[in-house]
Image (tube, rainbow, N blue to C red; front, side, top):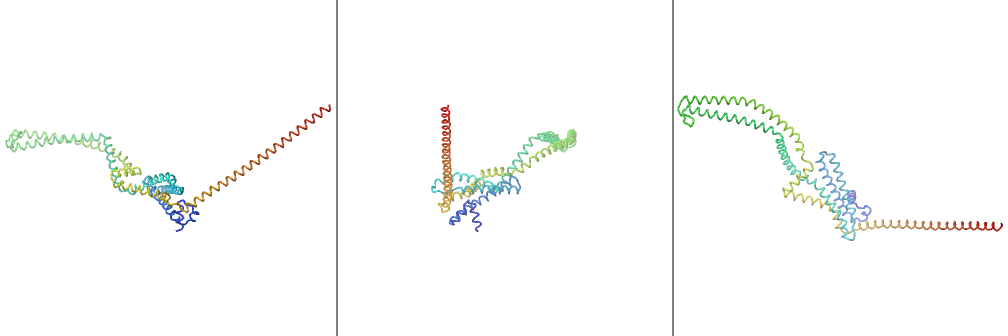
Length: 368
């Protein structure tokens, strides 16, 4: 238990030696440290999932996910540990404002990958719909890129239409021939029973139509085989082009695609938008909780000891500076005094030598 407590103290950025002197502050800093720690854990999970969707490799995603979590943990620890409780409340809020902005940005960054994981099923369904739409668009685009297929199929339909027309004409003549034989009175029959002159004419017309139909079907059969071969060849080429595009469509499930899917889901569903908003607010609350705890909590004995310790360091610095400054000034005064004294001695010696030389010159001139 003591190890866990000290670990959370470390996460909160508190000074161990000072905190041990005020045990009443231990619980507060354990709570702050736990919040910072679990925020780093959530960041590591979010980073792992986001990177796994990119690299599709557990090892790389785990390594960079832990690295991302450690960076977020270090930032949160710095934000909390750099705040100081002062006597003026408004000054604390002004100092905390940049830290709150940074905490908000971190909360949004951390929450996004976890949103993708929580709404994974809905996003997968949306991505499947988009993939189907991409497949349709790809096939439509390829169909426009192979107009020969439509032309050949149109020619094939034209040949089939000719056969249908020839067959319909043959069937019409067959009906007229039968009506003529059985004496049915119509606009094109005489109404006489038996194989008379009209019936023989109808039979000749029917035989000619059947012969024409047989010849047409025979000539079209080879043409159909040729057209089918060309169509199958072009369809194979079109399918090969589609298979080249298929992997990119099947792989449409990256991080950006999922973000786009989530955005579309929130636009289409008010419930999804509300759930996403609540999740972001939850992470904002978690990320900013340590800062608000420090802001709204009263100034405690730990803060007093910390300020006293920092003031002692400042006083020690001032003492060292004053001592060093005084010693420097003393050395400078000594140097100036000794330097000026030596200069005066040198000047007096020079003057004495000059006077001696002058007297010697006078004596020499008087002796002459």
